[in-house]
Image (cartoon, rainbow, N blue to C red; front, side, top):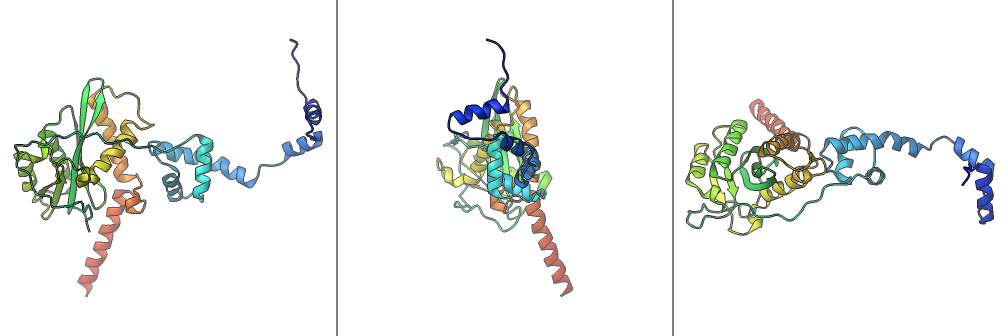
Length: 300
C-alpha cells in the first residue's frame, strides 16, 4: 500500500461526508487558541500532586492528597485533586483482612484489661498499645512489633526480627524508654494475650519504668483495635504498598524499610484522627499549650 498523508482539508471532507461539518478555519482557530486557565493550572498542579503522592509512599487517596496539597501551599479543591489523580493514574492504598500473629499461652497468668476498648488519652505516655505482625521474605519470616502512643498515634518503639520471642518485644520497649523517658508513672501498656505479652520478663520490664500491663480478651480483635489498625496500614502502605521495592528478600531489608516508614509515619503522615496532622506536630501543639498554661500559672 502506498504511503499517504491526511491533511486537515481531507479530514474535514471525510467528516462532512459523515454529516459532521467542520470548517478548516475552525480547526486552525482552535489550534491557535491559548490554553484555558484551568488547563494552565492543571499543568502546574499535576506534577506537584504527583511529587506529593510519591513522597508519601503512593498511598494517599484524594482526601489526604488534597490535605497534603493544601498544607504545601497549593490552592486546590478536593474535586480537582480527584480529577487530576484519575488523569495521572494515581490511587490510594487499600487494606486487607488482618491475620492473627500472636498466640495465647494458656498456662500463663494474664494481666487484667485496664482499657476496655477505650483507646483515648488526654496526653502522651498515658496509654501505649502494642502488637506483632509478620512479613514473608525469601529468607524466612520477619516479625514486627510496634508500640504506639494512643494520644498521638506516635510509634514510640519498634523492632523487626527473624523470630517472635519475648526479646523482640523487650527491644521495642527499650526503644520506647529511650525516646519517652525512663520513668513513666501512670502509663498503661495494652496488648493482646500473646505469649510474648504474658511473660514474666515483659511484666518486669514495664514495671521498671512504672508502667502497668493490660491485656484484652483472648480472640477478640476489638480489644486491641488501635494496635491492629497500625499493623493494617503498615502492611497496606509499606509491605504490600505501591512504593515497595519488590518482593522482600531478607529480614534486614524489611527492617531498613520499616525504619524509613516509621519516620514518615511519625513526622509526615496525615492522621484523620489527629485533624490531618502528623503525630510529631500534634504532640508539639499539645506541649506548646501546656507550656503556655504553666507560664500563666506562674504569673498568677
